[in-house]
Image (cartoon, rainbow, N blue to C red):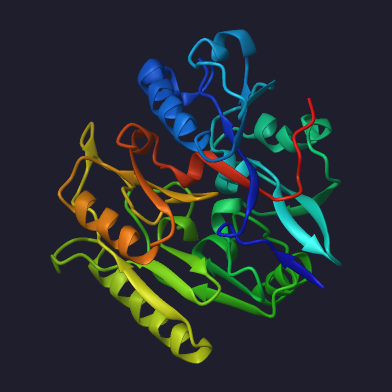
Amino acid sequence: MKRLIAEFEEQSFTQIIFPHKNTDWICCLEEARKNFVNIINAIIKYQKCLVVCTDIEETKSYFEENKNLFFIEYETNDCWARDTSALSIEEDKEIKLLDFTFTGWGGKFEAEKDNLLTKSISKHYSKPIDTIDFILEGGGVESNGIDAILTTSECMLNKNRNSSLDSIQITQKLNDYFGATKIHYLDHGYLAGDDTDSHIDTLARFVDQNTIMYVEPPKNKDDEHFNELKKMEDELKVIASQNSYNLVTLPFCDPVYFEDERLPATYANFLFVNGAVLVPVYGIKQDEEALKIFEDFFTDLDIVGIDCSTLIKQHGSLHCVTMNFAKGVDITL
């Protein structure tokens, strides 16, 4: 019996990579660090956080001492922990970590250091790591914790990833790695400014074993996203009806721009921690509506809004810069 542990299950810690001068964040390094500090401080109110950084002493200077805060040194290419960190699976009641191959979202960016991250810091995890010769990013798969994986064909079946495999072979790989009997591909849905080829964590997420939250189509039918998100919504309704899933809509964000470029602002990029859901907000009118949706659904969890208007300048958000590790995976320093 094997399964990809769902993010809404109990966790041990969150992993995050602190911005440094040799990343694209050099354009606004202190602004970015402030955003990451806010995220980390929110996380450690609820659980442990492992901060990967280039200089421990320098990074510690941004924080007050806290028993939930841990630091290790490793220099990465960038800070997208969701796609470069290990995924937690359960196999025969044992927790294992899977280290997939990362190629900078299909070779778009330099990623050699990022790809070696998990192997390089593996001694700091209490569970064994399997290195997998298969290109896959954590933001590209969503699990309901039982038998289903939700993903997008634009990402998972893209020829810039595993070009030697066809769709049938890739689906079988997902079955094998995650023990999933249902692989739900969305053939539609995207966000302008997204570098990931439509990662599922920007569009639709499992929030419990039977419920998917997703970004609704924009109210403005002239918006460039309308047709794709409407078709995605139609696909989700079919999947839901066939599998007895519930659907919850999240508001589509008003356009957010930086240097005349539209950015991929999305409320689907939220983060689970023990006892809370951290929700990205962007200083736009939909923020209040989105937070209310989370509060109404997660009545037993704290809902914490975190300004992520800096993060999306580099085309990602809250979920993209974090990775959850399942209960039972301890940090060893």
